[in-house]
Length: 218
Image 1 (cartoon, one colour):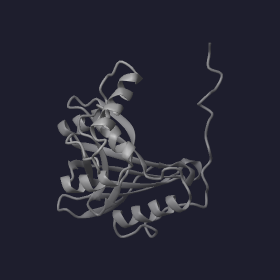
Image 2: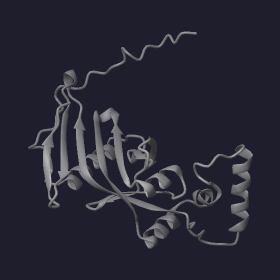
Image 3: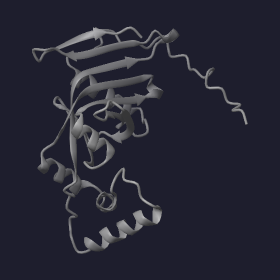
Protein backbone atom coordinates (compact mmCIF):
# COMPACT_ATOMS: atom_id res chain seq x y z
CA UNK A 1 0.00 0.00 0.00
CA UNK A 2 1.30 3.42 -0.91
CA UNK A 3 2.36 5.71 1.93
CA UNK A 4 -0.18 8.53 2.19
CA UNK A 5 2.10 10.70 4.35
CA UNK A 6 4.41 12.86 2.24
CA UNK A 7 7.70 13.93 3.80
CA UNK A 8 8.42 16.24 0.88
CA UNK A 9 6.06 18.95 2.08
CA UNK A 10 7.03 18.88 5.73
CA UNK A 11 8.86 22.04 6.77
CA UNK A 12 8.83 24.68 9.50
CA UNK A 13 9.76 28.26 8.75
CA UNK A 14 12.41 29.37 11.20
CA UNK A 15 12.10 32.66 13.06
CA UNK A 16 13.48 35.61 11.10
CA UNK A 17 14.40 37.55 14.23
CA UNK A 18 16.79 34.91 15.53
CA UNK A 19 20.35 34.89 14.33
CA UNK A 20 23.99 34.27 15.16
CA UNK A 21 26.54 36.89 14.16
CA UNK A 22 30.28 36.92 14.63
CA UNK A 23 29.76 39.64 17.25
CA UNK A 24 27.44 37.31 19.20
CA UNK A 25 29.98 34.51 19.31
CA UNK A 26 32.04 33.84 22.46
CA UNK A 27 35.81 34.02 22.22
CA UNK A 28 36.24 30.23 22.18
CA UNK A 29 34.15 27.19 21.27
CA UNK A 30 34.00 25.89 24.85
CA UNK A 31 32.44 29.09 26.22
CA UNK A 32 30.01 29.27 23.32
CA UNK A 33 28.96 25.64 23.80
CA UNK A 34 28.49 26.21 27.52
CA UNK A 35 26.20 29.17 26.81
CA UNK A 36 24.06 27.23 24.35
CA UNK A 37 23.99 24.07 26.44
CA UNK A 38 22.94 26.05 29.52
CA UNK A 39 20.18 27.70 27.47
CA UNK A 40 18.98 24.29 26.23
CA UNK A 41 18.77 23.02 29.81
CA UNK A 42 16.96 26.17 30.97
CA UNK A 43 14.48 25.83 28.11
CA UNK A 44 13.45 22.42 29.41
CA UNK A 45 14.46 20.46 26.32
CA UNK A 46 14.11 16.69 26.83
CA UNK A 47 17.58 15.21 27.32
CA UNK A 48 19.54 18.25 26.12
CA UNK A 49 22.72 16.19 26.52
CA UNK A 50 21.58 13.72 23.85
CA UNK A 51 23.93 13.75 20.86
CA UNK A 52 24.33 11.71 17.69
CA UNK A 53 27.74 10.04 17.59
CA UNK A 54 28.99 9.20 14.11
CA UNK A 55 31.82 6.71 13.53
CA UNK A 56 33.17 4.73 10.59
CA UNK A 57 34.91 1.40 10.22
CA UNK A 58 38.34 1.05 8.54
CA UNK A 59 36.62 0.68 5.15
CA UNK A 60 34.81 3.99 5.62
CA UNK A 61 31.34 2.54 6.21
CA UNK A 62 29.62 4.94 8.61
CA UNK A 63 27.30 4.29 11.53
CA UNK A 64 25.50 6.57 13.94
CA UNK A 65 23.60 6.37 17.19
CA UNK A 66 22.28 8.66 19.92
CA UNK A 67 24.34 8.71 23.11
CA UNK A 68 24.48 10.98 26.15
CA UNK A 69 27.06 13.64 26.88
CA UNK A 70 28.43 13.11 30.40
CA UNK A 71 30.94 15.92 30.63
CA UNK A 72 32.66 18.65 28.65
CA UNK A 73 35.50 21.08 29.14
CA UNK A 74 38.07 22.88 27.03
CA UNK A 75 39.62 19.50 26.18
CA UNK A 76 36.49 18.01 24.63
CA UNK A 77 33.27 16.04 25.09
CA UNK A 78 33.01 12.90 27.25
CA UNK A 79 30.74 9.88 26.83
CA UNK A 80 30.80 6.33 28.21
CA UNK A 81 30.33 3.02 26.46
CA UNK A 82 31.18 -0.65 26.22
CA UNK A 83 34.50 -0.64 24.36
CA UNK A 84 33.48 -3.87 22.63
CA UNK A 85 30.39 -2.26 21.08
CA UNK A 86 30.24 -1.28 17.44
CA UNK A 87 31.12 2.32 18.20
CA UNK A 88 33.91 1.23 20.54
CA UNK A 89 35.41 -1.11 17.96
CA UNK A 90 35.12 1.43 15.16
CA UNK A 91 36.72 4.18 17.22
CA UNK A 92 39.56 1.85 18.20
CA UNK A 93 40.27 1.18 14.52
CA UNK A 94 39.42 4.64 13.18
CA UNK A 95 39.39 7.22 15.99
CA UNK A 96 37.87 10.10 14.03
CA UNK A 97 34.29 10.89 15.11
CA UNK A 98 31.47 13.39 14.79
CA UNK A 99 28.88 14.64 17.27
CA UNK A 100 25.59 16.41 16.56
CA UNK A 101 23.48 18.07 19.27
CA UNK A 102 19.99 18.45 17.67
CA UNK A 103 18.28 21.16 19.68
CA UNK A 104 15.43 21.32 17.18
CA UNK A 105 12.85 23.27 19.21
CA UNK A 106 15.45 26.02 19.71
CA UNK A 107 16.26 25.99 15.97
CA UNK A 108 19.85 25.19 16.86
CA UNK A 109 22.39 22.44 16.45
CA UNK A 110 26.05 22.02 17.32
CA UNK A 111 28.23 19.88 15.05
CA UNK A 112 31.58 18.57 16.27
CA UNK A 113 34.36 16.64 14.58
CA UNK A 114 37.49 15.37 16.27
CA UNK A 115 39.60 12.52 17.54
CA UNK A 116 38.38 10.07 20.19
CA UNK A 117 40.59 8.84 23.01
CA UNK A 118 39.97 6.79 26.13
CA UNK A 119 39.85 8.75 29.36
CA UNK A 120 41.78 7.92 32.50
CA UNK A 121 40.56 4.74 34.20
CA UNK A 122 40.12 6.53 37.52
CA UNK A 123 37.72 8.96 35.86
CA UNK A 124 35.73 6.04 34.42
CA UNK A 125 35.47 4.35 37.80
CA UNK A 126 34.38 7.57 39.49
CA UNK A 127 31.58 8.07 36.99
CA UNK A 128 30.52 4.41 37.06
CA UNK A 129 30.16 4.59 40.85
CA UNK A 130 27.68 7.46 40.43
CA UNK A 131 25.34 5.45 38.18
CA UNK A 132 22.18 3.77 39.49
CA UNK A 133 22.81 0.18 40.53
CA UNK A 134 20.52 -1.12 37.80
CA UNK A 135 22.58 0.67 35.15
CA UNK A 136 25.76 -0.73 36.69
CA UNK A 137 24.42 -4.27 36.47
CA UNK A 138 23.18 -3.61 32.94
CA UNK A 139 26.70 -2.71 31.85
CA UNK A 140 27.91 -6.12 33.05
CA UNK A 141 24.95 -7.95 31.52
CA UNK A 142 25.02 -6.55 28.00
CA UNK A 143 27.52 -7.62 25.35
CA UNK A 144 26.65 -4.44 23.52
CA UNK A 145 26.12 -4.67 19.75
CA UNK A 146 26.45 -8.47 19.74
CA UNK A 147 23.71 -10.61 18.21
CA UNK A 148 21.69 -12.42 20.89
CA UNK A 149 18.94 -15.00 20.34
CA UNK A 150 16.17 -13.32 22.32
CA UNK A 151 15.17 -10.96 25.15
CA UNK A 152 15.27 -13.80 27.65
CA UNK A 153 19.02 -14.16 27.11
CA UNK A 154 19.58 -10.55 28.08
CA UNK A 155 17.37 -10.84 31.15
CA UNK A 156 19.19 -14.01 32.21
CA UNK A 157 22.52 -12.18 31.94
CA UNK A 158 21.14 -9.36 34.08
CA UNK A 159 19.99 -11.80 36.77
CA UNK A 160 23.39 -13.47 36.70
CA UNK A 161 25.08 -10.10 37.20
CA UNK A 162 22.71 -9.26 40.05
CA UNK A 163 23.57 -12.55 41.75
CA UNK A 164 27.29 -12.12 41.16
CA UNK A 165 27.36 -8.70 42.80
CA UNK A 166 24.60 -9.27 45.37
CA UNK A 167 26.95 -8.65 48.28
CA UNK A 168 29.25 -6.19 46.50
CA UNK A 169 28.94 -2.46 47.10
CA UNK A 170 29.68 -0.58 44.97
CA UNK A 171 29.50 -2.61 41.78
CA UNK A 172 32.91 -2.28 40.07
CA UNK A 173 33.21 -0.89 36.57
CA UNK A 174 33.63 -3.65 33.97
CA UNK A 175 37.12 -3.75 32.42
CA UNK A 176 35.51 -3.57 28.96
CA UNK A 177 33.54 -0.42 29.78
CA UNK A 178 34.80 3.13 29.98
CA UNK A 179 34.87 6.73 28.89
CA UNK A 180 35.81 8.37 25.62
CA UNK A 181 36.74 11.98 25.04
CA UNK A 182 36.18 13.56 21.64
CA UNK A 183 38.86 16.21 21.22
CA UNK A 184 37.44 18.61 18.64
CA UNK A 185 39.18 20.03 15.66
CA UNK A 186 36.00 21.81 14.58
CA UNK A 187 32.86 22.94 16.41
CA UNK A 188 30.07 24.46 14.34
CA UNK A 189 27.21 26.48 15.83
CA UNK A 190 24.13 26.38 13.59
CA UNK A 191 21.20 28.77 14.06
CA UNK A 192 18.08 28.41 11.93
CA UNK A 193 17.00 31.46 9.94
CA UNK A 194 14.13 32.36 7.63
CA UNK A 195 14.16 31.19 3.99
CA UNK A 196 16.74 28.53 4.90
CA UNK A 197 19.46 31.21 5.07
CA UNK A 198 20.79 29.72 8.30
CA UNK A 199 23.74 31.08 10.27
CA UNK A 200 26.65 28.65 10.51
CA UNK A 201 29.72 29.75 12.44
CA UNK A 202 32.54 27.26 12.90
CA UNK A 203 35.54 27.23 15.20
CA UNK A 204 38.29 25.33 13.35
CA UNK A 205 41.62 24.26 14.81
CA UNK A 206 44.59 25.44 12.75
CA UNK A 207 47.86 23.63 12.15
CA UNK A 208 49.65 25.62 14.86
CA UNK A 209 47.09 24.65 17.51
CA UNK A 210 45.14 27.89 17.38
CA UNK A 211 41.55 28.42 16.29
CA UNK A 212 39.87 30.45 13.56
CA UNK A 213 36.19 31.32 13.16
CA UNK A 214 34.64 30.76 9.74
CA UNK A 215 31.17 31.48 8.38
CA UNK A 216 29.77 28.66 6.24
CA UNK A 217 27.13 29.02 3.55
CA UNK A 218 23.88 27.26 4.51
